[in-house]
Structure formats: structure tokens, C-alpha cells
Image 1: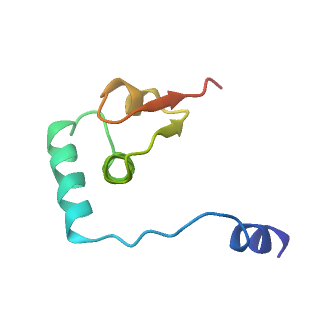
Image 2 (image 1 turned 135 degrees about the vertical axis):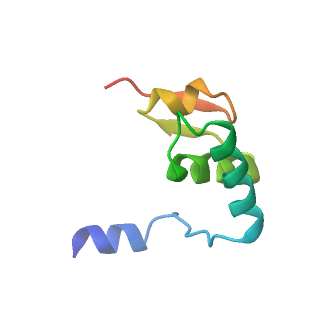
Length: 74
């Protein structure tokens, strides 16, 4: 219950998936079919749409160089 409350009161925003985002994710998946999951493609597409950076532990997301990415080593 505490995690739920913290999440609900945080600045996180749920972004609905629309046709533009899906189309961009699909193009990314076609381009990087052997490296990225569809979820990663949506992540990158959303970062591009919002002109934001990605923070991840997945080096493959950074390697494709489609959006500004900060890699956290674990």
C-alpha cells in the first residue's frame, strides 16, 4: 500500500499509446529487430517524442544511439 501511495503521489505520468508512438516503435523494431525488444522500441520512441533522455542498465538501448541515453552500470 505504501508503494502504491508513493507512486500515485509522485510526478510520474502515464502516457497512453497512440498511433504516432506505435508507428515510431514499429519502425525502430524493424530497424533493430535483432537487438531491441518491442518494449525497448516503445521506450525509445517515447523518449524521442518527449525530447527526453533514457536512463537504463540495458547497454543495447544505448548502443543503437536513437535517443540520448545514460547507462547505469550494475
